[in-house]
Length: 265
Image (cartoon, rainbow, N blue to C red; front, top):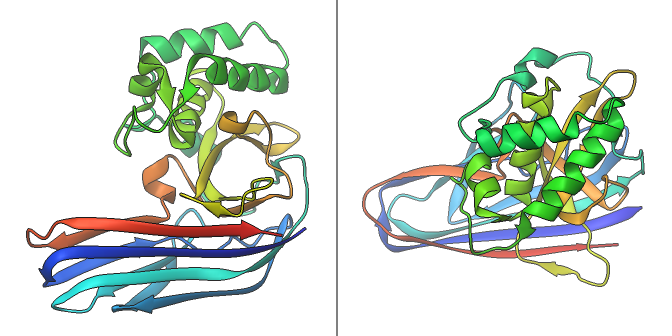
């Protein structure tokens, strides 16, 4: 499937900014399931200071705001050809070892609710069936809702609160899988929605390692495994490692953000 993507993020500040830096992960990964035909990141009101590949294999750009500026606009756009692999990604020849993805992080630490969830899923002896059951249980117990959580909300808090977005669903799945001894990781990217071109934000899902298969994807929010409608941007142990944007600024300026995202065939 050939997907056309345009993702523009505009930051505005209520007063001139002396210094602000954005760490951006908006470049599709190089994988057998997706081939980038063209891709470009453009910046208005700032410039790309540096680019590098992090220890997860993600392409990262460091983008600063023009000194004294009050806005910056970052656009990532291009076309990606995708292939359906039933959500399976082979284990790469290089990169972090599996034990690294078995370690809990502050966002994915399993409390009582997630530990109980993980124990329930262990009634399935087959690992793949166990992971699919885990995904279904999360979707049933944590309804999709945009008003109950934030980027700093932990998996346990979202689980106990009973509501969350794709980030929270992924974190809960990762926390429960790791609590059950299964390596798991966070994936950020794009999803083409049927009948809807304009979107409010990028997407996120989880992957768990299954011996003999590799990394297997689980999109809890949409009750499916990733197919040809998905484009992967970055991976990590949790949101902080794979966030499309993360930044810092000097001073007391208040920030607002406007996102314009289109994913279409």
